[in-house]
Length: 94
Ligand SMILES: [Zn+2]
Image (spheres, helix red, strand yellow):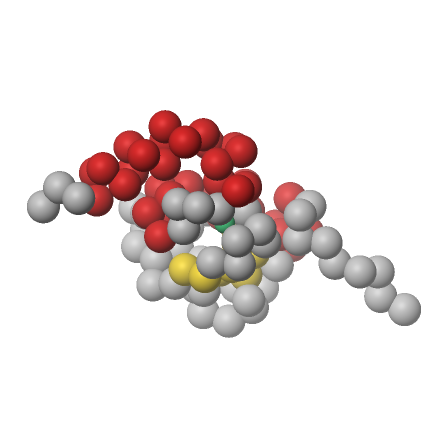
C-alpha cells in the first residue's frame, strides 16, 4: 500500500515537481506552499487550495500567492499581514 501524501510537508510538495518542467525554482514554489498538479505549470496551495498558472520566469511565488490569495492562512503565518498589504497596494498602482 502507498503511504498517504501529506502536502503540508515541504518535501512532499517538492517531490511533485520532480517530473515537471517549471520556469520557477521548485524549492521556492514548494516553500511558498505550492505543489504541482503534474501537468503544465499549474500549482496549488496546500492550505488555501488556490491555483496559479502561466508563470513567468521572473515571478516570485510568495508575491503571486499574496496577489491572488491574500486571505491564505499559510501565507499570512509565513509572511505576515504587512507583506500581503504591501503586495496588494503595489497591485493597485497602474
Ligand atoms: Zn495559499
